Amino acid sequence: MSALGARVKRILAWLSPSAAGEGWTTVTRCKMMSRSGVLPISNVLPVAGLLLGGLVLAGCAGNNPAPAAKSAPPAVVTPAQPQAPQPAPVAPGGTIGLMLPLSGQHANLGRALLQAAEMGLFDVGDDSFTLLVEDTATAAGPESAARKLLAGGANILLGPLFGTDVKRVAPIAQNAHVPMIAFTNDSSLAQNGVYIFGVTPESQVQRVIGYAGSQGIKRYAILTPNSPYGRLVLTSFQTQVTQSGGQVAQIDFYDPSSIDFTPIVQRLADEKKTVGFDALMIAEGGAKMRQIAPLLPAFEVGPQQLRLLGTSLWGEGVVWREAGLAGGWYATTAPDRWRDFANHYRDVYGATPDQRAAIVYDAVTLAVALGKGPTGADYSPTALTNGNGFSGIAGLFRLMPNGTVDRGLAVMEISPPTAPVQRDPAPTSFVPVIN
Image 1: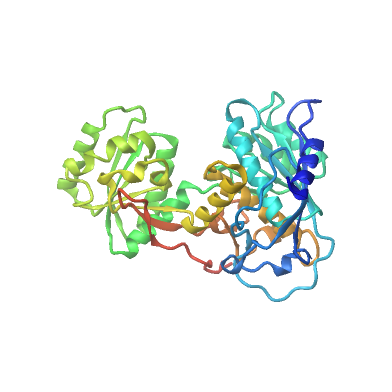
Image 2: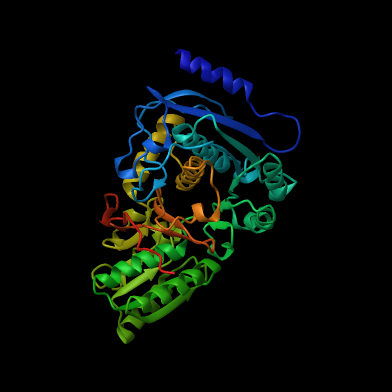
C-alpha cells in the first residue's frame, strides 16, 4: 500500500460513522492539490477546457472509500461563460449540508449518491470546506436532518432526494434563510430559496418538442398514462407544441395499471387515420414501453409512418434496443460528460452510478465554486442565480429566482441495436434573461 493509501485508510478509520445518537452524521473535509499546491478556483476554466488529471489527493475523509486516482475526473461545475479576471479569493470555504436517505428501503441509493458527493468534494474542494451529512430516513424524519445541519453551521443545504421530503424541509430552510438545492424533479415544489435541481419532465419535453418543431413537424399526438406524471408531461407538451407553432391533433390516456396495450395502440392507429399527425409522443419507459414499442409498427403508427418522441426514460435500461422506436427522439443530459463521469465513478468505487449521481456531484461542485467567490463564500440569491448559468456533468444549468432550473439538454436518437446517438448537442450558453 502506498503512503497515500495508508493515510486515507487511517483517516477513514478515524471518521467512521458513530453509533451514538440517531441517524447518520458524517463530517468530510478534503483538500485537492496540484503539484504546486491547492488549485485555486481562478485556475478552473469553463468545462470545455477543464482538466483535473494532474491533481493529487493530499488528504480527505468520509464514510465511503476514498476516491482513487485511476482516471482523470470529469468536468466540474464552473461558470458557463468566461468571466473577467477577478482578485484573488478572500476567505474561501463553507459548510455544506447534505441530506440523503442513508437507511431504510432507499439506503443503497442514498449511499451511492453520497459517494458521488464525496467524489465531487475530492475533485474540486480543499480543506476550507466541510461536508455535513444527515440521514432523511430516520424515525425523526427529514425535518430533524435539516435542523441538525443548520445547527452545525451549514451555509447551503443540498437535498433531500424525494419530493415528499422537500415539502417538509423547505419551510425550515426558508425560515433559516439558507438556500436549498433539492434533488427531486418535481418542479411544483420550486419556490424562493428552494431550487429544484433534478432534470424535470418539463425541460425534457420542451427540448424535444422544440427540436421537432425546428425540423418542420407541425401536427402532434401524445399517448400518456393517466397519472400525475402523465398529466404533467401533457401540460408541458401542449404548451411547447403551441409555442413551436404546431398543433395538438390527438391526446390519448391509458390506465397506468394496464398490462395489455394492444387495444390502446389500436385506438391510436384508428385516430391517426381520422385526424392525422406527424409525430407521436409517448410518456412511458421501462417494461411498459417495451410492451408498447413492438405494437407501434404492427399497427402502422411506428417509425415508418411518423416521428416518435419520448423522455429520458427511453435512455434507461434497454428500452433503446427496441426496433419499434427506431429513429425516435428524446432529450437528456449531455452524453459525453455523463460517460466521463460514469467512468471516473466506476474507477473510484467499482460500480456504475445511478443517473442522479451526476446531479448530486454538480450540486456539491456548485457549492464549492460559490464558496470560492472573489470576495469569499457567497451563497446569496444573486450568486446562485447567475444569469450566465453554470456548466457541470449534467450540462448547462441556470438557477432561476422562482426556484426552477433551466437546463441545456441534448436530443438523442434511438438507433437499435446500438446505443442512442446524439442528434442535436446540448447548448453551451443560455439566451440572456430579459427583465
